[in-house]
Length: 363
Image (cartoon, rainbow, N blue to C red; front, top):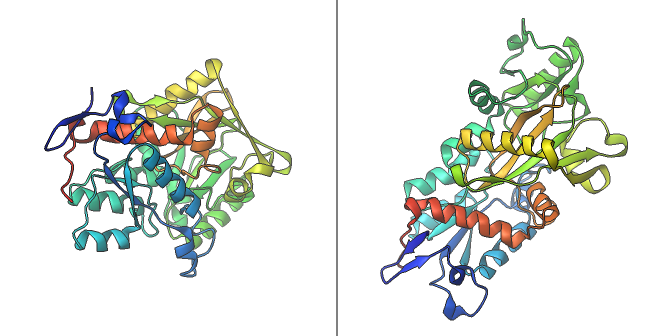
């Protein structure tokens, strides 16, 4: 049993009454849920490029989240990005919990900024804490941790300057991408390199363009999957893996920014069951728990030459566009509605906060 406490009475959040879509009289007091996010349109208006803002949110995402939370019995309140959050906190505004999908824009700690601020004000929030978001945004650091724990991941090096390539022992072909970007940013047909010249040229270009380290790893030639994970710690569960099947001219290998943007024409998705599906789920759960991720997200995997799954990267702030984002697509294929997805994320966050207890604020 998981309990929320108010000044007047306890609330069992695992009860049917709490989640019922029935009359208002059957629901407890509505929790005030702040929404933190970064609208892409706001940054485009500041002259950022579409690719620079590719990970940011659309109005459709915020509308869908707000509507789902309201349907589930919460009282959502839009906050916005970190600048808006700072202003509202300074003005004395508070929320029972914050549903945080803010990616941030600047620095290797950009995803950790809002959770760190909320920790300072002791306001609970969904998804992972600042430490986890900082570690996982840097793909090289996440891979160092998982490799040390014995979780399969391709051999790699992190390149901060071109001199880091001197004497490397990785065998070609290699795959090259920025160390701290998502949504396929910085990934293109050039990412698969076959010789030292291509490697140095691409690393040089990415270091200049993205102004961050570059991840160089052994290319895995097998099938590619993404695994949705819901929950936290021992209560986390992996959903049926979804294979990314490249179509037509994209049938090579690259799940790039352009491929994701045009996924309807270039990619087909299908669920993978059986022994391979279970092996992918086991690996995804092991990585999720090892990194300390919370509430919901995705783990990306790829098969090596012997058809063994390996960890590629983790997305602890997975996109939540109701139609186009991978996690909602995966859920839809598995028969999980968008509203049910949001409910599981909220349940996980509420259950772990304060050992299952949270005190409602007086507004």
